[in-house]
Image 1 (cartoon, rainbow over the protein chains, first blue to last red):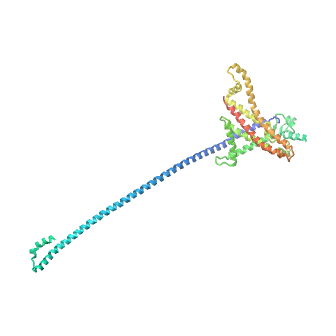
Image 2: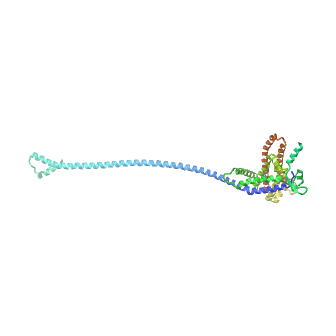
Image 3: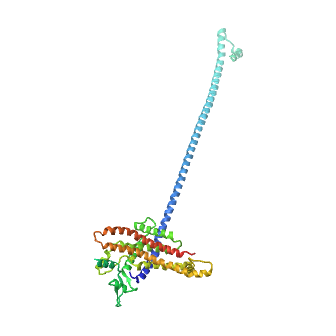
Length: 156
Length: 277
């Protein structure tokens, strides 16, 4: 209970311990804690930013999807149009080809008819002459009557 | 029985003192009377020894954590130390409005050290003295904070810091002005001259009361607590637990609170020393 030099001894050791704490204990600990605080703050900020980025990415994906759908619809529509167009073209072509073929066939037929007429015409004269010969029983001078017979044939 | 009880209590309240005997030789005092006769230039070996040992434990533990401290995931011990540091740092930031890198480590040292010294009170009163008795050492007070030398040694160190920072921040003139021009102030210089001695008396009293109350508060609380443990120890051994257990549980609060009060008042006093009017 007596006050003695212990009071001085305690003051000295107190000073030494405070100095030790100030120099070697406090700074590294508080530095590490502050560093961790910063790390956590940065981490939280990153998380916030990532959430924002995710939102943006989702929006972009949705937009891309929308665009793709629209494009696909456009393509289908175009393809349908083109298909109809092709069918129409093919129809037209077929029609004109048919027309052409018909015309050609008609021409050929006419030609054939003409040719048959020609040959009939040629033969008619002979037949007429032969028939006349038979009727007259005389020979007919072909050369003398050929002009008349040709006229006759032409009238057929 | 009464005599031996008194003896027991006195024995428990006597420090192990090293000093100069009346015959001129140096050594340990054999009785309280002899310790008293050694005068001022003697040292309480037990108080000093335990307080230094506890401080070494505290600083060793914290230093070992500080050596391998990481800003990544903290280990269990680092976590504990960080809680302490964070708690002290928060308290200091709340009550100290200035920038001084000394205050927080000072507060940490005070809080943990005083807490550990107080915590020695929870060790049953006879354990350590009986152990030392085996080695022929008859006096052993294990709670350093029940020794006024220890608490006053710390509070006067704080007082020295208060004076140092008062003069450093305010200058000698500013500090003297603070002591002499408050609380009574008058624009008339003649009346002010009358006020100055009154102000000086009040302010110096106020200033000197700070370290004394700071040291004696801690000492008084711990001394009273220790005394009650000693009184409980006088009862028959089979009934002691009914009182010592509740008192020890209550004492956990007291030792923490006293350590906290000592720290906070130190911070507040130093904060006042830093305030420039």
